[in-house]
Image (tube, rainbow over the protein chains, first blue to last red):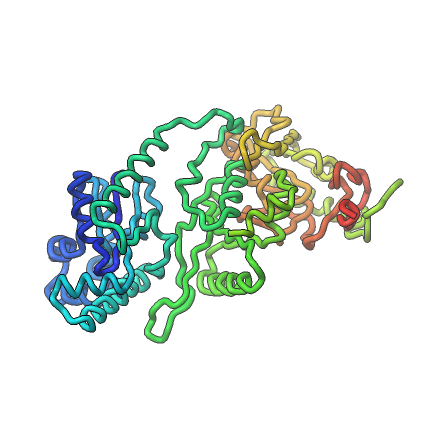
Length: 321
Length: 180
């Protein structure tokens, strides 16, 4: 494991866990403050550094040859992480490294009550002051990933491991992460059985966090035909509020790289399908060059039957979760 | 002849042959001096490729390919196997894939990738019927006979459980008779 991203709520002990983890794993620790004070100071003036500390939207502004601060940070994070195994805290790293095969994306959370109490003790605040600090922090973090990536910060599917520190210590969390990494390394080093007669490379499906079992089945069908795919590689903002904040985004389930086509699988009830249809319609309007197809419940079941899933029980399995 | 389930005729024999004659002329014009290899995907294309190639007035080769999907050994997997591979070496040749109908595009996607690995000079796709409603991927179709609605069809090579291929027309099929 060469990259561990840590997303944390204020007062969740996420920073402390990142420090201990980097020491334990002998990995470079990359904090937002360091990025701003060391890396960004080389390319940004005092005013720009101030704005980078205050406004997520300012990261989208271009500063050199059409390059935005956002893109610059992404490039430099990727460059450093590839040179040295790194623990990266915040900065939307869970999105930047979402497709990286050697990245573990961790999120540290705790209840608002626990976090308020921790901040109150740490900074000698009143209960109200600490509560306000927690809420402001959440808002700021949420806004950062929303503005820069169109992604909801609290969306659990953007993380590989989520830990609640209400009842876990820093050391316990570090141990869980280390154990996860060691187990994953062990599994990935084991060879697969050679029962794949079609010479299609077996994928470690469990390492991909499909949101729904139907998506994994669809991935297997694509693999049967040797059709290359990526899982949720891109998020498209499809709606903004009056201030330009992204209020709705859409991440199609699959991208077929060779055929330049996105696919959204839906096996859900009609009311949710309507929402998906609306998103797909908006996406087509806003991104007319993007090819996207939606696979509905009926079509998906037809596909499954074609490949031998004729039993209703098996098909219904896909609708339970 | 037992035609249980066969409903209204969508494309009659004359309509099919007229359209194929147009396609044959267009393909001949496009491939003149290119000596293409037409690869017919069995079994559904047998009548189509026979009628199409007899409407073409250029030198060409014909080969056949057949693939099948089989249950896999492991849970929830299957295997795509080539039942009949090409006899002709297509490296450096202009290839035209011939299909009866393209629905999801999975089969054609597999075949196009398979053909590309053999380094032909070009690959294009010709299909008699195109059902875009179930399409999963963006496959460029160079020649299309007819656009069809999302209904089950039989005839002119297209089967249901290996029946009805020999009908000279293309008809809608009522698949409820299979379960009813």
